[in-house]
Image: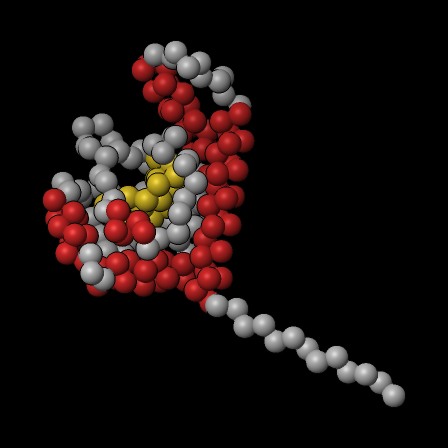
Length: 173
């Protein structure tokens, strides 16, 4: 007589799986960033602004070389972008929707061409803030990265190297 063990049927929340995929991609990027930064001379706490800018530039150059040819959507895949679009739409429809709209309207309009590996912000252009209400609906990021809204695009920015890691166009209505 054979015993049959019933198979466990686990349903995976597809939205949660997309967020996990996004977080794994972010983790891989941060690992790469740390590897590249390890090859640079360490900054001393008393470093001059010029030394800090030089360190940032060198880190950005190293990351650009390693990521050369990485296409837009390597982190914000079409499926992940669709989930983020849904999360952003939720923030734009909630009780704080007016605050998000006002914050985005008061931001200086930016018409920058977005490219992976490009510096952001560029000299003379202020670093745009992202409405906190919008951020509450998005997955948290490690301190090395942040979200920025540029035009209607959601940008993933390397805060240490000051460059665009990835972006998803047409995210903000």
